[in-house]
Image 1 (cartoon, each protein chain N blue to C red):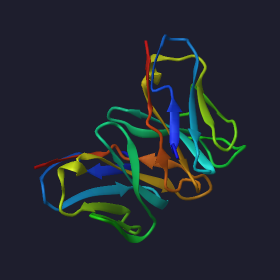
Image 2 (cartoon, helix red, strand yellow):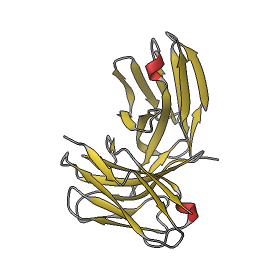
Image 3 (cartoon, chains in turn green, orange):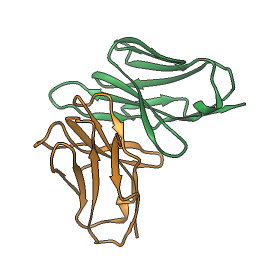
Length: 110
Length: 112
């Protein structure tokens, strides 16, 4: 079982739809990242959060530490949102490590 | 500002050859990282440097060495390349250890 699991693995949406991508993890963490990887390969950091909720434009990230779960929401989706969305967790404890999920491939159709 | 730069962008090596991937950042970040990305595996941390003068192993360090040359530069060396090291390699940096990360454009390495 992977320590970080994302769902769905693939998602196709119509422009304007509300999108949710989920990330579940099995270890105690100190924080969680959401990243976006563009079709050309470039990777951009979207959010880093350790509790609650963060919002940036049409993107919203939430985390529930007790349930070991985070969600990334995209409101009013647009074709330019098409990308791979990656969740990564930072292990807590004496040794910090970063473990990544395998990503969710999102395609937003016009 | 260039952000995080990596050289080269592409490289083909024969098994047993050595090479060094270069990474530099101009954001005065303390921490730097090397990742590899393989199809179906996601990103995996190879080595990181929490601050100048320190380096630590990540999830997949075998077959690699790193040098934090100064605050700006963090290089990754393959001493004897193997086909299993065929991958896309990303360098990243952050102000705080494992904080918000800024990624370089990647190096696509093929070992034949």
